[in-house]
Length: 150
Image (cartoon, rainbow, N blue to C red; front, side):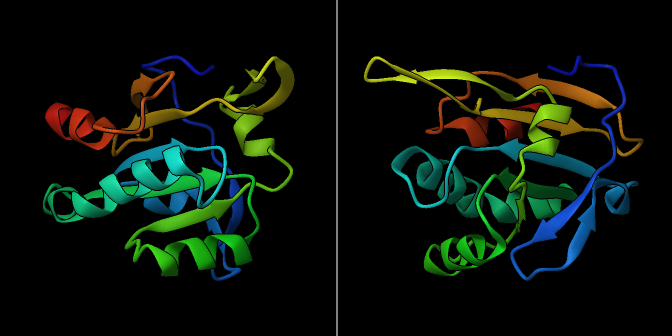
């Protein structure tokens, strides 16, 4: 995983509308870049809805929220519409961005091992530096933890 006080690597992937988006387009703004496993699953929905509920506080602080998962733009669009999410969701279908940030790895569920997204959030400075990395994120309350740092 990428270290705090290192530069966040730039990338370009598609958002929920099919538009190509790059991390570098948000330079000059703080960014919450959160990686989550799958749209519309219990933990991921909790995490996204917490960010949604706190969105006005992030806006006041001038912070951009970007969610990243391996789901397709179409899946993201449905998830965003269903839960009224006011922030951008990015489709990392080949998990290259997850690998770039070191958040793609071995997981296990019900005794079965598989590879997937390790729920992780990065707080990125206006200059593009990783200020804080949150590993093994617990979805409930995570948004408030980030706001406490801002």
